[in-house]
Image (cartoon, rainbow, N blue to C red; front, top):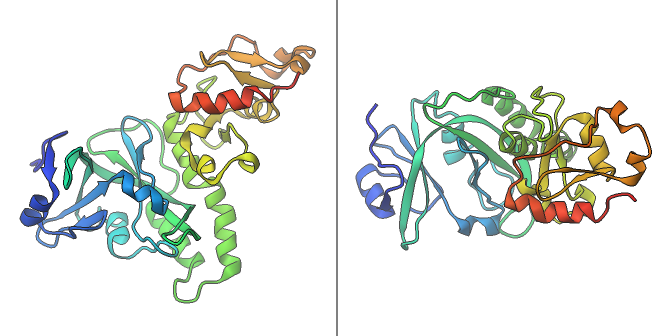
Length: 293
C-alpha cells in the first residue's frame, strides 16, 4: 500500500490540505477527494479537556472533536469511528516546532473507544470521547474490550442527543466513565499485565489510582501517570497503604503487614516493578507518605 507521507518528516499543514483537502482548522480533517482522514494532535487542545498521548509504543489515544457540550458521533468523530467500514485510512500528525507545521507520526487504525468526563470550552463538565488507535501493521497481543459497533449502539441509546435524559446520562457517567477511557489508558500503558506479577487476565486486573480519586484533582484523576495496573491482592494492599514502592520499583511492606504472615497473601517482599515512568514517581512519593506504620 502506497504511503503518501514520510515518518517523522515535517510538513506545512496548509500544503497537506492544498493537495488532499480537508478542514484546515480542526483536529480531524476528512478528505473529500481521497480515502484519507488526517488527525492533528497538539498541546493547545489541553485547555478544552483534550489530552492525546502514546499509551505505549504502538497505541495512541486521541480525544474526539467538539469544544462545547457532550461530544457526539457526528462529523469527524463519526468518520473516525466508522473509518474501516468506509474504507478510509487515518494519518496521525503531531505538533512541530515550526509554526503552522506538523510532523507525520504514523498511519493508524481504530482499535476501540470509550468515554470520560472533561471540561468543555466554558469549563463545564461534559462527556468526551477517547479513541484508541494502533499503528497499522502491528499485531498486539492483548485483546480488545468490546467492539466499536456495540459501544456506539450503547452510547447512542444512553444519550439521546435531541432530548438528553439526565438519569440515563448519570448512569452512563457511573458505568462507563468511572471505568471507561481511564481504565483503558492504564491497561494499554501497562500492556494488560499486572505491574508487579505480570498476570494478564484483563477482567481481573484493577486500574488503581496512586493518589486516590477522592483526594486527586480533576487533572490527576485522568492522568495516566497516576495509575497502576494491579492484581486484586496487590491492589487491595496498595489501596489501604499497606504496601508501596520505592522509586526503584522495589516493594515496601508496612509495619502492620510485616506483623502478619504476609506470605499467606502471596506477598514475598522481594517484588519489584520495572516499568515505572518518571511521571509515576511524583505520585508514588505522595503514596509512600501515607504508608501505615
